[in-house]
Length: 243
Image (cartoon, rainbow, N blue to C red; front, side):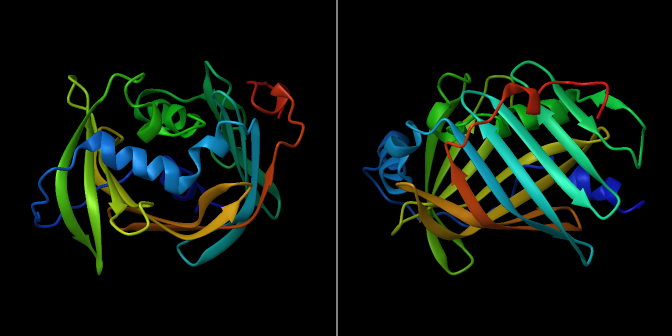
């Protein structure tokens, strides 16, 4: 079970890469984001209180089931279901924690970059739609090529230097890639994530496939089922010493 440690570490990543610019005058970041909100069904998502996603994760040739619980406004839980147990990381609205009995036989707090990343995952509507409340400024940097697709490049920046880039398809106005610089054990890494297999779900358009690349580590997440507005108690997200 030693491979479970890099597995859970890769789940805490956000994303980074770059290409040459194509100028497209007259566009603003807010205009692109508004078109993305329409394409992704943000108005429908604002009515959703809980999301349950069931699927699988593949890393280093191993595929195992996963479940993701999300509850408005800022609760999040990610479970990796292994043959003889599970690994859980969660955010209860104030505290981020991880339970990994293959590493430490107790629940432990998430801190530093790991805590910041799970807090972002817990942002129910996503950073691109709440960036102003989070203290980011948005810049439009033109059109870039992502593989064979043209994409609008939106960069969100904080005065602290923190930044994340979103690449939004020029035709569908759906996010096809994000990128950022993250710290892993104090070492900076350029990480990137690609989004695809978009499907209409409850008025929303959601990615059912995500590929994350952090250095040489590649993680694939495939969602099979998304359930909306199921009853979901806060107990699933709370830090408990007995897991």
